[in-house]
Amino acid sequence: MWLLVVEAFGAVALLALIVWWTMFSGRVGGELKSAAIEPAASDTPEPPR
Image (tube, rainbow, N blue to C red; front, side, top):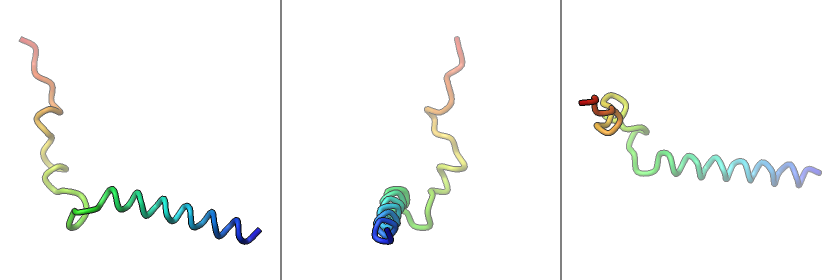
């Protein structure tokens, strides 16, 4: 029984590591500051003419 618990914990830890790696890989300090402040130009719809 304890072997199943250890294996399940290992699987969850591996999943968390993969998610963390894909979110923060290559970024110094986590999220980009400019992306949080300025919306992208494509985020705002063009007004009707």
